[in-house]
Structure formats: structure tokens, C-alpha cells
Image (tube, rainbow, N blue to C red; front, side):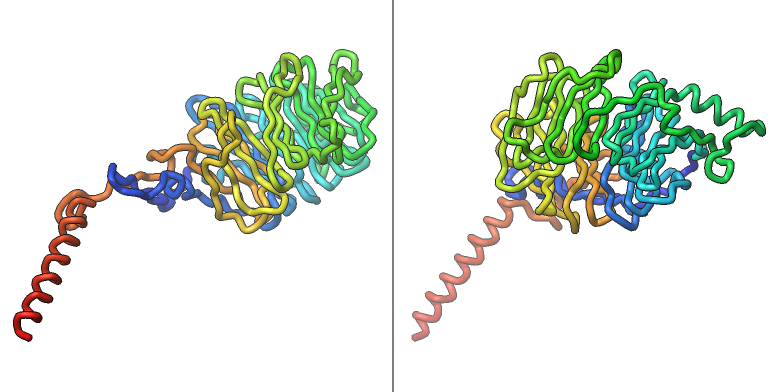
Length: 394
């Protein structure tokens, strides 16, 4: 259950008045570190805003999945039950349920209010990606089997309820009901490589799938067929796929480029190239910026959406960044890294959550730039007078 979290120390961001030359990027580069994981964190995902709050869920190769308050990063609880690395984790629309995919050959459905396991969907190989349908009635899985599966959530929850009442099933240790891959209500095949990412298009009529290497396909759930091949022409390795908050654009990190495509036409409307391979990207049209991480660098870059120019470069992680996502209120964004940490960063300098902006003192104990200049002039005049006196004595 959600419990009260003691307040932790706030990072202090000094807000400089006019006349000072400290860049804003230096101030916004302060981040909150969300610890708890002990191995690389491949994925993070935010919930929608629910009753004024939102939540952040993370999957980790340590086999744990953690739920946090999205605004502060404070830990709420850990979903315990997987016996292998957790590659992917998502929340449903109202943040009451979660789904995770793991190297233990299962995807699990969880009650996000109390941490109980509701169902376990068994697969024959590693599950690399999961997603929750916007309607909350189905979950999507994909992985090393090169297959996409859609499971009925209500049926799984009913089976879990029967198991709790003493019926068949019981999952691992009787905690949830086990569902076989054969129980999926829809299975789609056609990929030639292990599936790295599978996500519903916000309309839920279609879904976008990214596989390892260079495959990127659009599927129609109504027919189970591929509608369109969206892979880049140069067959670049696809590392990350995400959608903008309004669902109008898809963001793809592939090779050395970040591509943005319209979900109305699926044509690429913007692309920016970098000198090294990118690992993840996210776009905010609120700020007209995008975030990018790299496979061979440890920084996070904030870039102008139109020009691609780097506006800010943030350092702090001790390993490559695997996943970047904007919070639903766009006040912060989260980065998940190989170093086993999640960091929260401000999109603009202001007091927010555990970030606290401190105005510098304006009394005599804190001289202004003008006072500094006056003091320097006075010192110079004194030095000239001393030199004149020395000459007269000589």
C-alpha cells in the first residue's frame, strides 16, 4: 500500500539575478538521484496524471520493478516475484495496475496499489517488452520468441480471483494465476529478430513494434497483419521507440539519428543526426525540445527540436543512458542508466517537488556586480597612490 515517505534534503538551485553570468544550463543540470536498483535500468515509464499526482515505474536487470512518486522520485514499493531481469515495465491509465516483462520467461500483471501479483503470462523465451492498452483491457508482450501476443486482462484477473478462492492455477507459489502463451487472445508473427519494443498506438487500433537490428513495423490488431514497414532506409539499429504526449508523433532512436514521424501519415517529419550512435530519445512540444542519450557516452543532451542544436548537456550518470522520458506535466524528465540509477532533471529552473530555488541575499553581506566593480576601482586607485608616494620618497 502507498505509505508516507519522509521528506529528503532538497537540492538547492541558486537563482542568479540579472548581471550575473552563470548559465541557466548549469543550474538546470542539478538532478535528483533515485537509488534502490543494483544493476542496469533499461526502462522507465510514467503514468498519466491521476487526481493531481503521477507515478514512475522502472524495470531493472536486478529482477526488481520499483514504483515511485513521479514528482519527487520517492520510493513507494517494489514488485517482487520475478526470477530474472526485468526488461520492461508499464502502468495502466489510472496507475492501479502494472505489467512487467522478464528474462524468467514471464510477463506479470500486478496490483499497483498493494503490490500483489494478479497473473503470470508464461512464454517460452525472454520477454523484452510489454505495454498496457489505453483502455486497460489488454496487455501486449514481445521478446526473444519473435512473436507478439495480446492477453485479455479481465480474463487474467478473473482467473487470479478464482485461484485466490481455492480454484486451479496459483502461479508461482500461489501468488496470482498462471496463463500460458497459448492463452493469448491474439498472436502475431513475422519478425526475423527478437522484439525489443512493442507499443500500442494511442488510438489502440494499431500498434507499433520495434525489433532488434533494423525492423520497425506497424500492425493492425483487427487483422493481425503488417500494415506498413517503418524501418529506416539505411537499416540502422533501432534502440528506442516512444510517442509524444498527445500521441500525434512517434519518436525513434536509430543508428546515429533521432526521427520523428506523424502517426496520421507515418511519414518522417523531422530528423536530426549526431556523431555517435543514439540509445534513446523523447520529444516535448511544450518546450519545442527533444532529449537524446547515447550508447557510447554518459551524458544527456537537450536539443532544439527545429534546428537540432544542443542547448544543454547534463552529466551525472556513470554509464550510458538507456531510457529518457518526459513527465506528464513536462516539469521534469527521467533518465535510466547502465549505472543502476534513475535521475530526475528539471526542464526549467524553478522550485518544484524536491527542487528548491534559492534567491541570493541582497544585503551588504552579498555584494552585487556593481559593488564588486567599485571595490576593484578603489583598490586600483589605492595602488596608484602608493606608487606615487614611493616615487616621492625616492
